[in-house]
Amino acid sequence: MFGFLKKKSSANTAKDRLTIAIMSDRESTHYPFMDEMKAEIIEVVKKYIGVKSVDIKKEVVDDVEALSIDVQLDK
Amino acid sequence: MGIVIAVISGKGGVGKTTTTANIGLGIAMNDKKAVVVDFDIGQRNLDMILGLENRVVYDIVQVMDGEAKMKQALIKSKVNENLMFLAASQTKDKTVLDSAKIKNLVEELKEEFDFVILDAPAGIESGYEHTIEFADAAIIVVNPEVSSIRDADRAIGILDSKSQKVKDGEDVQKHLIINRVNPAMVESGEMLKCDDILDILNVPLLGKVPEDRAIIEASNQGKPVITDNNSEAGKAYKRIADRLCGKDVKIPEFVAKKGGILGLFKGMFK
Image (cartoon, rainbow over all chains, first blue to last red; front, side, top):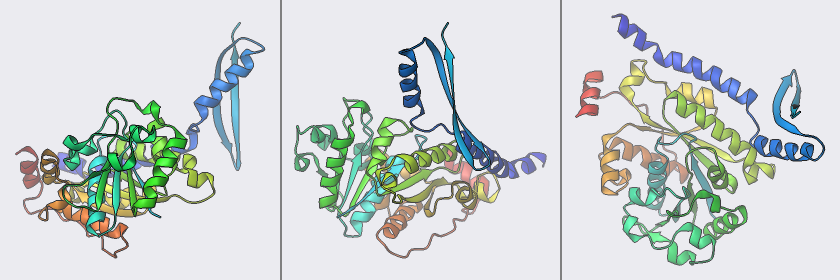
């Protein structure tokens, strides 16, 4: 009986989990060109100084969207 | 001038190739000229589903590279002469694809056919991006299952940012097909309802296809299931193709067959 009730709700569980996962995918989604851009930034910075890694994040604050680019230098 | 439709999914194994074959044939049955193109370079499969694997001489890459003429590479369906098929290359990999060449190929096909249907590779890598690049519309195939739906959402996101139509400021039409619906499981709350999937993905529904043993049987024989008038999946594909051809065909609700869950399991494990 308990198993039956549990099963009954699994579609709803799926819906809830999906809604949250997709919301967060859509918000934080890397742009498709992100990897390419990263590689190019590394190339540019490398001309001047050693670079270890580049991290690009999309940040959304209210209506403003911004890209924050972290360049970690290679000492 | 025909319309170019990319059949996409994100996740693999949801029935993209089966959908492509059946829709292509269904459109041909509506007396429209259709061509189905396998864009899964390196993993050709559409030829098997259509039962044309022994007739492939030239493939899409050879046509794009000018090694073969389009006419030489197009293979006529065994079932309906309005349907043609262009095979993927089996030996090369998808890195051979190039935007300019794809554009030429698609333009050439659009001249001759009413419907140009491109079967995209799974995933959201370069092969996928090339398939959607010059599409006027996309058919998104999902299964009522979490990973399929999530991956489809990502594929739609790329469609919305990378297709030429979108870059030109136009809309790329989107249609959703929910494949492998199991009515008994939906009724018992064990499978996502179609309405829930529509809420989440926010793409208009083109059709639903029930889980059906006839699909495997059809692929065993290389005869798309739409030719089987007794199969529920075949009838569903027929309705979908009719809708694409502009006919006003309702989307029926599926009901579980008598015998409920027990009957279903019998069916699955037989």
